[in-house]
Amino acid sequence: MGNSMDIEVGTIIEGKVSGLTKFGAFIDLPNGKTGMVHISEVAQTYVSDISEHLKVGQEVKVKVLPSDNGKIALSIKQTLPKPSRERKPQQKPRTRKPYKPAPPVTSPGDFEWQSTQSRGGSFEDMMSKFKQTSEDKISDLKKSTGESRGYSRRGNGSRK
Image (tube, rainbow, N blue to C red):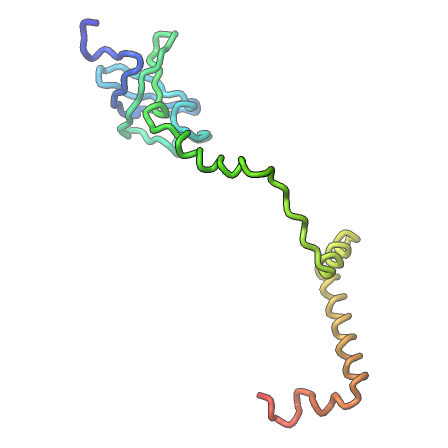
């Protein structure tokens, strides 16, 4: 190749983002050519909106990819450190015994709550029933302890 600015596959060069499309980014390269970074080569994560990753005018490092159609194919992703090293720690827990979900914690209260919901009672209905029963219980208590009046809130003022 006569010109040292010729772009060879596998080299990493710097370019400038000149345009964004739904499927990738156009990069102005040092030799006056334009290359294309496909959206799948922008980042190591899934890219749904390229403008979240690149801005026009941004300087980027790109790796030249083999291209069959005469256009210059580029990758930003391949210039980044490989994520495989970071992922390994997260895979370690899998070597332990297979994950079993903990049994749901059901106290009698929870069970009652769920069964009222499944019968189609609304939250307000449940609350009013709940208030109703607790008020009944309180009045039952007062009836059963004959001398409850002495301990009422109006009491002798000793409790503050």
